[in-house]
Length: 344
Image 1: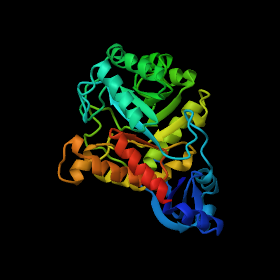
Image 2: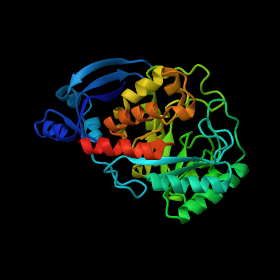
Image 3: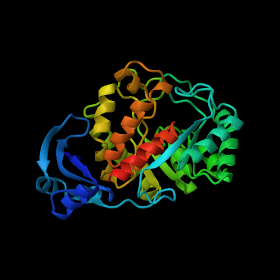
């Protein structure tokens, strides 16, 4: 029987600090947030399980180790101290990405876009050469490398902290040699048998994302017993596998993969329960920018018309303690983060 805690009753800023001092709340991820209650879940792996609301005393008794994991400050990651949420700007060097396919397919355009995103306030530039939109066809690693390596090299030379968005070990290896600091893999290092070894020896920071299936199949009726708990089990297994290769957990961030093998109710549940992913002591990354669920829940807007919904999702993430948001619209994300931070 596995046990899970999902923090609820989140508060922020001075109110969180006062409540924590009065033992009315517990800190979340060592930041400006705290939680005042939780949902406790008992279940066998793969089963729906039983959820029940608990107060802090009951939560401590139910899973004391998780309480400690939720509260501990996060170690620096990829050279960042995580005192405020980071903005990861997106540069897709692809002809077919869902939101900006073809806009930056040429290396020169992608490099200019990366520099523009840095000027707009991006902390990290995430460079990808293969679309992973629903239904996308795979790209050969050599073709992917030819797209991304000139961009990675130029942006790293310009002083950017570059993330390589790839599921291919060879591309990871070459991109790190070209100056990438972060490996961001939508398959959580399961898509290529060499990926765990390459990532482990690279010394790079790592983002593990959850995806059910692959881009061609992931939206074909995805099902979960309990989407949050299923993903918590998944990340527990992936972290253990990398620990066996000597990868320290402080190198790893986790991303629940909004829109990757999830229906809209799954996406909404994950957004609401993002705080649960702090149980690992790792940074949590939210990638909701321009995702299809925003249009489906609104008026069917095209990807580039989903800014307001994207910012609403970012706000949900900030309020649940995520340390990184992945954004196409960096200047707007920067402004939203500034107001959120100033308010608390």
